[in-house]
Length: 183
Ligand SMILES: Cc1nc(NNC(=O)[C@H](CC2CCCC2)CN(O)CO)c(F)c(N2CCN3CCOC[C@@H]3C2)n1
Ligand code: NI
Image (tube, rainbow, N blue to C red; front, side, top):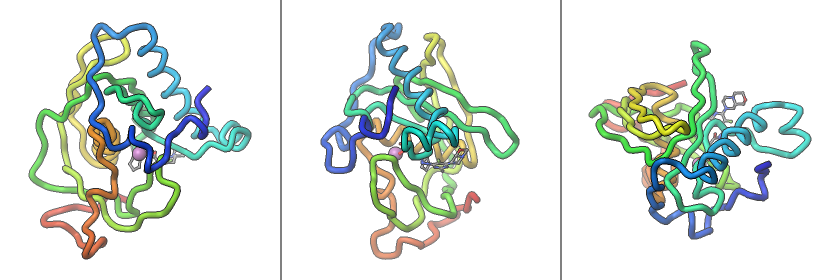
């Protein structure tokens, strides 16, 4: 099972590399890896298991955070309406996005960053993301609000981008032009 010792921390070269696309159809190894990544997220959100294995809670995880520079990412959370987002995705790509921006009002963190970095992380408010799922089916997701932010954080990891790269150095809490806060 994946635990925190498997997650590389800032300074590790895997986090700032552009990862490679994976061959399709997904190999058994890559399918198993996506499954393990989803299981880590489920474990991290289970109070007992998280306590037992000292897991930090996560709603998304990208393969580079395991030192694996492949375009693989896992998502697991429920949105405010209780809709479940459970995905293991290969070669995700933001194919279109809104002009408008959005940001989490509480800022962002990262399982690969062992420090608090304050400030708003401006992202596209709405995106259309294309990828291949664990069953080798093409997926096209239109995302907004909290889900849109989570997916963008993970896709960034596959391109070697950390959340703090988006924070305004001079004024971390500057609200970007036509951006909306997401609670
Ligand atoms: C927002 C949030 N970020 C948590 N952690 N950070 C992460 O997931 C990092 C990725 C997120 C950081 C900002 C956007 C994406 C991991 N990253 O580094 C991967 O690249 C949470 F854990 C969390 N939630 C809310 C839902 N809750 C359900 C019940 O269980 C606890 C869980 C806590 N919300
Ligand atoms: Ni992260």
